[in-house]
Every structure is written in C-alpha cells, then in structure tokens.
Image 1 (tube, rainbow, N blue to C red):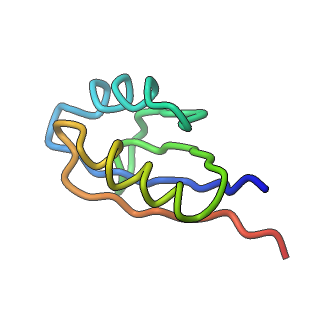
Image 2 (cartoon, helix red, strand yellow):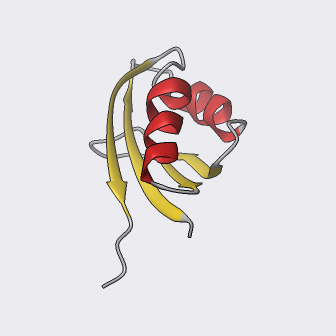
Image 3 (cartoon, helix red, strand yellow):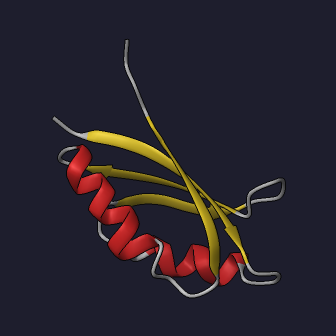
Length: 78
C-alpha cells in the first residue's frame, strides 16, 4: 500500500521558490511547486504507510530552511 498526501506550506517572505526547489529533492516527494494564495508551496508526497509519511514530513520537510508552517492532507479513497 502507498499513502499519498498533499503538504501545504507557508514560507518566509521571498523563500517560496527556494523551499520548493529544496523539497523537490527529498525522497518521497513527487511534486513541489511554488504557488500564490494562502500557502506558498504545494507538495505531493508518497510513503509506504502513514508512519513513514509522518517521518517524511517531520524529519525532512519541516526541517527545510524558510518554512514557517505546514498542513498535511492525506489522500483518502472511499
């Protein structure tokens, strides 16, 4: 089973492009784009399970310089 999620990211002013570029290199990230709106970067990520997804977000994504806040939205198929 593979778990997918979107991670909505707020960054420091002027850091969105740098954050998106840094995140794009993280294993498990399939898409990272800087956007306009209430969030600065939108990331699509995948992991083997929810625990691995949590580790990806906390240990790798949130540690990137310039990120001020993240919101993780797991994809659910009903």
